[in-house]
Image (tube, rainbow, N blue to C red; front, side, top):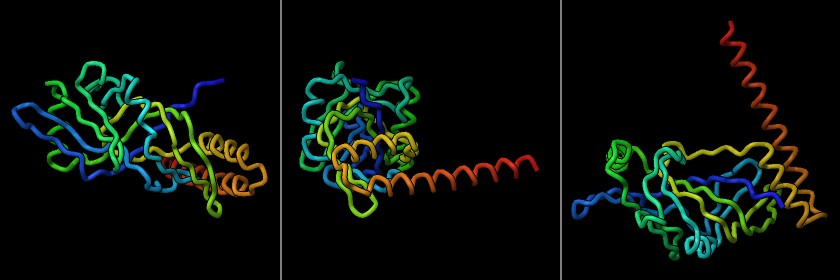
Length: 207
C-alpha cells in the first residue's frame, strides 16, 4: 500500500506567543484545534477529532520548523527542545529555539504580531468522510505528525489531484452518493477559471 501523501494545515491562533522568561526564549501556542470546521479546502471542509495526535506525539520524532522549511529547524522532540501535548482545545506545543539569526528574527516577528499563524504537517492514519450538500466533510481521527511550523502565509491551496483523492475515498465509503460527482464538477470549474485567469495575465505581460 502506498504511503499517504504529506498534507499541511494552517490556522491563525491568538495563543501563539514568544517569551524570554528567565532569559531563555520560548515559542508556544496551539498548532491545531479540535472540533472546528476549516474553510473550504477545495471542495471539502475538515475538522480534527480530539485524540487525533494522542498516539503520534508519544512515538514520532517531530520537528518545529519555520514555514515548513527543513533548513530552519527550531526544535525537535528527540532532543527535548520541542514538547507537545493534547488538551481539550487542541495540540499545544512549546519550543526552545536555537540562538540563530533566523530564530531571533522569528521571535521578534511574533512579539510584534507580524507572524501569528501556525501550521502542521502530517500523514493521515485514519479519517472519515461524510457530506453536507455539495461539500465533503472530512474528520481527521488519527494522524502521523511530521512537524509544527509558525508560518508567514497560512494558505496551502489544495491541488485538483488532492481533491480527487478525497473524492475517491468518499465514493468508496458512500458508493451511492452523488456529492462526490458534484465536488469534481465544481473543482473542474474552479480549475478552468484559474487557468483562464493565468492565460490572461500571461498575455497582458506579453503586451
